[in-house]
Image (cartoon, rainbow, N blue to C red):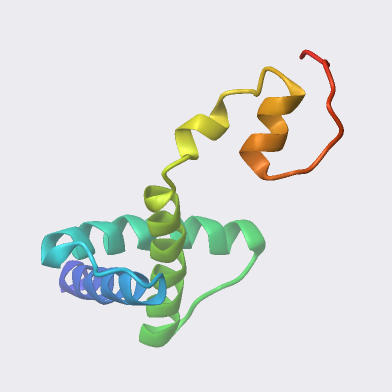
Length: 107
C-alpha cells in the first residue's frame, strides 16, 4: 500500500512541479517519473539540510521540491555547456552576460 501512496505522491509532485515551473508538464507517465525521482531527490536534499517531513502534506512538499529541482535541471538547455570550462575571458563574459574590458587572458 505504501508503494501506491508513493506513486500517487510522485504523480502529484510531478504535476505540481510542471505547474510551478510554468511548463505544460510531461504527460501522465513523465509527471509520474519526474515526481518519483523528485521525491527521492527531495528526501536526499531535505536530509542534507536537516529538515524532516512528516505526514502526507510534508511528503508532498518534499517530493514537490525535489521534482521542481529536477525539472529545472532537465529544462536547463545550457546545463551541459556550463560543465565545460570557458577558455577565454570573452567566453566567460558572453556566457554569463558579464560586461568587462577587452582582455587576452587565457585559462
